[in-house]
Every structure is written in C-alpha cells, then in structure tokens.
Image (cartoon, rainbow, N blue to C red; front, top):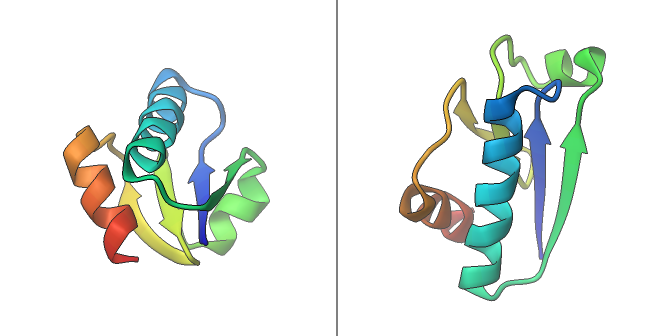
Length: 79
C-alpha cells in the first residue's frame, strides 16, 4: 500500500494536485492511503518551503508544481 500526502495550505494548485493524484492512483489500481496536510508546521517537517508538494511513502517527490497525470503515475508506481 502506498502512503501519499499532499502538502499544501489549500491553494488552487494544491487542490489540483490532490485531484490529479487521486485520479492517478485510481488509474493505477493500487491500494493507497491519501492524506491532505495543511498544517504549516507539519509541511516544514518534510523540508518543504514551497507548495504544493507530493510525498509518497515518506519521500518528497514534487515541490512547487503540479505534474502531469502520466508523471504522477510514474512517481507513485516507482515508490
């Protein structure tokens, strides 16, 4: 099972990353747990200073942008 966190304070790009990530994992057909982290103190613990960010199994994969659906699928699959 993949553990996925979307780090962001609720900006439009953060919401877009959340929706695109949900779409990616559904297309991959894998088991996952998805969490949205909005607390700035929790976000900083990951060393992230720009949002949105994607964390898969504890590893920061994307910071400050929303990757394409295909890029997300590759990142999630390889994690």
